[in-house]
Amino acid sequence: MASIAAREGRRDEAANYARAVLRTNPSQVDANVFMAAYLVQSGRPEEAIKHLETALPVNPNRADVKFQLGVLYSQQGRLPEALRLARELQKSEPKSIAPLLLMGTVLIGQQKPQEAIEAFNLALKLKADLVDAHRGLGQAYQMLNQHDRAAESYQRALTLNGKDVASLNNLAWLLSEVRKKPDEALPLASKAEQLAPMSPEVLDTLGWVYYRRGAFPDAEKTLLRAVERAPNNGTIRYHLGMTYARLGKKQDAVSTLKRAAQLDPKLGQAEKINDVIKQLGG
Image: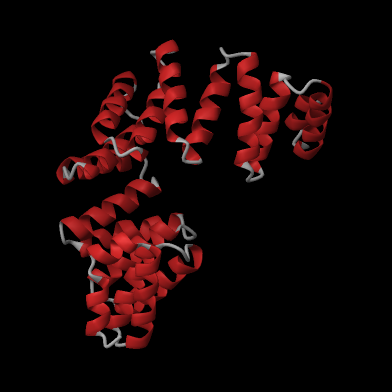
């Protein structure tokens, strides 16, 4: 009944059927898998994980369950557990692409770019036109400060999919910050913002590109939107504070920079925020 209701688009009704099954048999695999998917779509990933963790020991050979659980672990920052599942899947299904992509993504999160490069390259040997793999290589090369190779990988990803937001955003940042070419970065950052106008990371990149171009009113407007969506992000507040300083809004600059240093003490030291505040009279 649950599967019929789900196929007909009655997902809430289907979830009620699945819950009824689980009250009778809490370890029923398909009901747990359905509830996990339902909860992910409902924005409740931690509850979804519990259902998958219940299902997997019942049938440890369910690759789909193992992969879904690995993805959720990765998204929730449980990287060692995600990597373990990805490696198990890659071992059992050596011709499968998905475990390699998951492995590479997790290794990026663990700050292991060289191992990530190996995983993404293995995936590309199986299928050469994987946007995720080319983007992942770009991220890994960027972590290694191999900026030319990073740019090349992002450009390959964009050749395959010109609407890949992460590649647009990352390449724009690289062009602006590393190659000091904010004019070239602007079209990429603008397109990323058009595709993902609610993303604080994308808004931060676009705002900082405006800053680098000297378009401080545009930078202020864009960075304020970013702060609204990520109020506890120290980097975004730092960028906004520096923009306020350029606009002559010293009081706003001082308060914003102080908050940035509170949120991210390492950033405060790296950017010598206290020195900037003193120069502003704060």
